[in-house]
Image 1 (tube, rainbow over the protein chains, first blue to last red):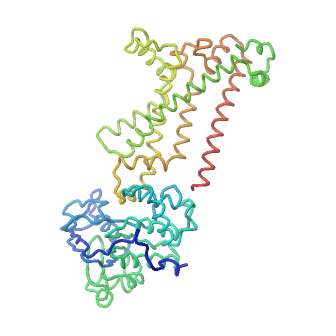
Image 2: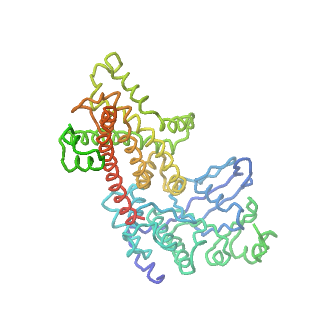
Image 3: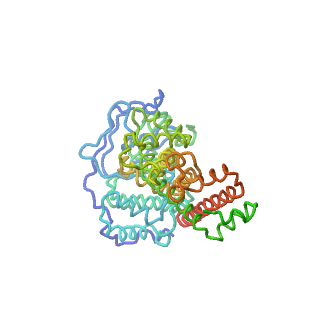
Length: 251
Length: 239
């Protein structure tokens, strides 16, 4: 099923333009508290370039939180999170895909409607995206009775239609079987080839090795490392990262 | 009206069947008026209460909790109290007396809207809030503000909201206190199923009163069955 996913040529109307420069995202002493608990220590971090950034760490390290701050779903309790120039177009794919109680294709046309695409173009664009993600046969099916892998592919198709300069993915494969994981990873790479910056959380080391250009390693609500992927996997700087890589670190 | 049937039998079930089969003109007029008043009241109440309930689910503002508690409390508003309030508003000396609406079906609709509105608003708030918890991050990620979330959430909660509206209809079609006070139970003008039942009971015609009760219950059952079928079919198709 994977072979059919991303056939060239890519249809021009829905392929994201090659983004020459992706805006840089700054965390300036950004922290986050919830009900008196500090969930993210003051963090200074700069994410730049059209890279695939993998945020790693054990459960409860604050990976999802960092991503929600970056995407703007949460605002920091102190400090700031901001894009250097104007805020780029963004999309996010969640661990458990949030699909509307409508057919697969209507989930896509909904996203297009919301982003202001004229009505007459929506259906064709949605069909192209379904085709691209191998979902055409399921177009009329209720989105919420699709399998986990199909739902996540539909969520990716929706993100694809939004043409994002930055794509956030929060543990997108943690509930999927190997074939579905491969489909999601292929899609991530396809986004990246088209000039979309990837920011993704995972606790799967193998997945991180396959995808990462750079790694942000978190532990206990702190960013401990922000390094190129090869250096992170070969010579992690922190003892926690070393332990995590050996599978000895419990969140 | 149903005087022809009155003597037919002391058995309320037989009376009910005879009334339905006999297509008694008086009965048809009463049933039609009952349905018309309650359905229009539910329609108006829904148009007002669905957006308000959704707004209450989505916006945080000072006094929000007070409003929610008030709406929940008003779900139990006694129909006679609602009827009395509308009566005072519409009576000759009341602020809306000039329109001459008292003892008309319009007055009955107004009273029932007041009864049904809090039920639909309060239950809509609950349904939409639950759905919002699930959708919020995705919808905000898509760039929607609360105002634009409203139609999406109302549409996606549609199956639950149908039940909410049916609860409102149940309240409207079952109550007697409000329509009795503001309608006056005038034969051929404002007499509905429930007020007829009260009247026949007070006259001692218990089989007829019970027969009318059975007709009323059957109608409400049919309407609920239709709504259930529509909802189940749609649910199967849309998941």
